[in-house]
Amino acid sequence: MKARRTTPRPPELMNLANNLRARLAAIALVLLACGATAPDGPPSATPPLGSTSDAPEITPAPTEPPPVPTATPINTAALPEASGFGWQPAITGLDRPIVITHAEDNSGRLFIAEKGGLIRVWQAGRLLAEPFLDLTGVTDGSGYEQGLLGLAFHPDYAANGLFFVNYTDRSGDTVIARYQVSGDDPNRADPASALQVLFLDQPFPNHNGGHLAFGPDGYLYIGTGDGGLFNDPSENGQNPNVLFGKMLRLDVDSATPYAIPPDNPYVNGGGLPEIWALGLRNPWRYAFDSLTGDLYIADVGQNEYEEINVVKIGTPGGLNFGWDYREGLHAFEGDPPDGLSFVEPVAEYGRDQGCTVIGGHVYRGEALPEFRGVYLYADLCNGIVWGLLATPTGWENQQLFQLPGNQFSSFGEDEAGEIYLADLNTGTVYILVRQ
Image: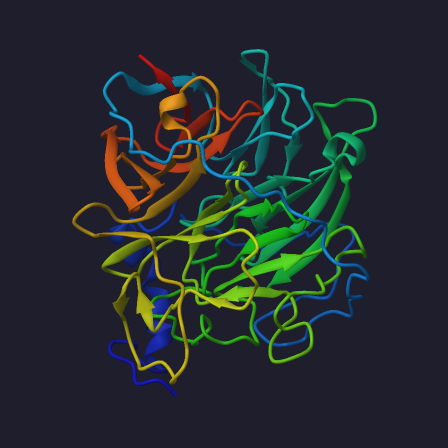
């Protein structure tokens, strides 16, 4: 058992939980108000996966994962000068946009998930009136960190029409579900196609993670928060027998609802087989570089430090990002066992520069060659956008833009690699342009 510095012990936890909304509003942690009635889950469901080791019966994938591409970043010199560039409004009239993505189907569309439960379509310069999917009946987006939180299209969406969502149901628990596009309208999903892939019984209303992304290996990556409250009171981050505070990795093609990739670190025991990495607090947006395949993870800190982690393509699973022994590059609480090693962040910033990190993307578009290879990320509270770049002498990191009054929630890319940024306050999606 770790020696804790500040974590209160039961029965104080219940009082702290009752006061959680007030604390969250005060510190403006990741996002938004509270909700709560009984859920109506998707029509097909697997047994719940809570904070224990009761994983469903699943069949390991029979083959090795497909090969992944390797490449070298284009821009390895220095971060560009921000003057001459800016964020131009591209889409307006949204309600708390929280995900921006595309389907890789050469349609030119953007899909924007709104926190309240709608997935909207932006096509040919206009926002379509009818939503792609309406999940308002199964989720409640009024909670600070609840609602529709994640959306990812299958890499073969153009052929199979499958996509995945991550939302909190009306009891506040996490549901990851698969849907399929309608057979007669490419701009509408079939709501009756819902298949529950994963369920997490959330102990508190915060630190739900929520992001989804397919890696270059074809597997679905699911970032989970540590379960909530603060200071990880249940010690979830370092526990390989719970799904909280982890990066999960699932094969959604070899079995229904999923199979375990054969090279996941706990496939032969020692932890839950879904886990690919542990020691995360609340990963709020991660992305694979579309050129190199490297994984960038933004992890929200406790009280002092926000961090960016980078995992090179081909790195085996079993990584430990440190929480809650570490916060950023700094000791947080307890002494790690001898021999335990952590992934060190490549960048961090303190609470004097923001409150909640918002992970972004490595720019790989054509319109702004000066930004190629630059990872862009932001902060929820102050409208600052940073640039991070791997150079021959190390990582270069600096503030590039500030848009005061904006409450950024997410970055996104279009099919051409141009980069977008969503603002919760105004319901606006911006695009980075040359001015």
